[in-house]
Length: 187
Length: 158
Image (tube, rainbow over all chains, first blue to last red; front, side, top):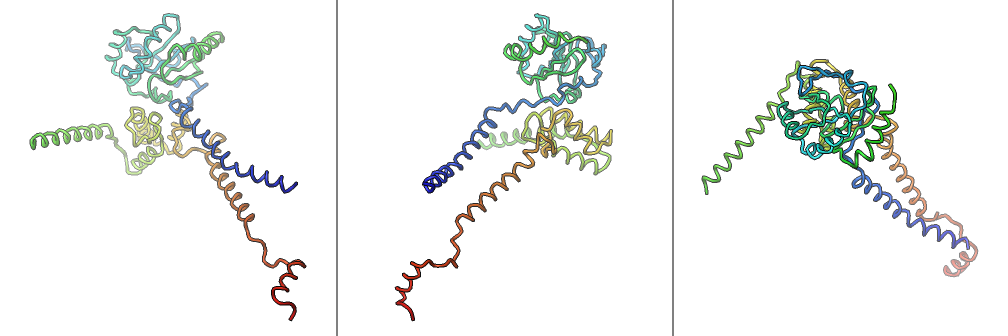
């Protein structure tokens, strides 16, 4: 009787390696296929927009600083005319701008002439563009590619960062609820 | 045919030379002394490129890696920053990801202690198995029946 039990127990033990193996398989599957490794968390989440002092694209004599931007909720969209994904994203930004979403552009590592031509040829969804020609502000923002879009609140605090294209799905599911909520906050 | 080969080789060589010339222009960093230079190369090899993810910023030619090399150089030469300051600068902007050798923290504890814990579990299992399969002790007393049997085989008492 008790002998029977120990036999059953040791039989179950035989399945331990298989259980370990399957757990390992699941971990690897999640790590290799399900997790989007492209998206790194922003180290600047809930930090203020870093200090900067850069000219506007269309009015190069006007200097913008992090203080200029405070007071309103806005999207800070990092883009460049050299970036194919930005071209895909562009029409949706135009749509958002027409609905009254405030989008500040960061012309990232681009030639001014190319950026201006881009805005002339396609539509211009940006309230204005900041020129970050050598990518210094980009480094301070933890940008590592384009497009990237930061959601900044009225106090100038970065509340969310989206890496990659902002499209209908991203806007409706992720950005819009946060954007609406931040707009309700009082300074 | 021969001239085609020569021309192809020449074109290849030209392209190759152009590309190295370009790289040389990009990487024309000046240092005050060799200590700074060594610091520059050491840090570049320790920092991971956020864009390409499997290369250090020394290996990668991605625009962001170029920018980060430039920042490392600027901090070394202009600010005389030490390693910790530069590493903290990168951590503040790109998070733990930029380090090939992660810091010790609650988030990275599994990385640091996981292998040791797995090794301990392995040793534990191994010792368990060895113990279980160790042959029975040899100086065991024979019971009465076995002794009688043995006596019979040996042909009784002397």
